[in-house]
Image (tube, rainbow, N blue to C red):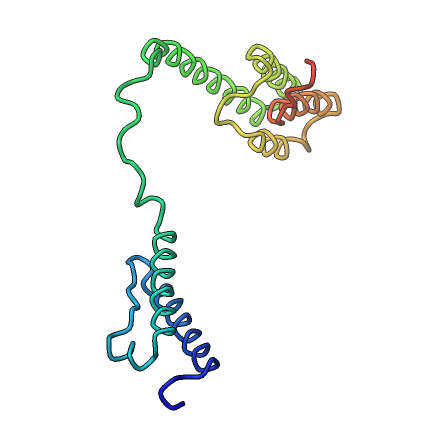
Length: 190
């Protein structure tokens, strides 16, 4: 009985080998592992343990291959060889749109400045009506790159000096801007 290990010894040895395989897999996950025991160990462990060690090594190699990053297998060839059709044709249209947005933003900032530095209710009301007109002329949208927060900050600064009709006009403007910056439900009828 000294020459052949018991079933419990074989199980412990297999579990140790599996733990070693998992540890080696965690430490060296980027390359395949080879955990086949040497000839001297194979003879000492017996044939059943050697077969278990070989299957553990094969399983760890398969697990290592499965854990390799997908980027290593990715193709880096370009999908597009040139400019997409219609891109150059739309360059003039894009340039016109950007120029329109630039002009719109400039007019917006001018009227916002007029509101901020207004000396009377008449000037403030005129600036508010001009901003409302700008928004309506541009499809009820505010300029790109402009935040509602900018309008709110200006109003907070001038609000104590405004009369009730001007504050009511600003509430109309604020509602219009809020509607412009709110995400729209595409199912809603306009």
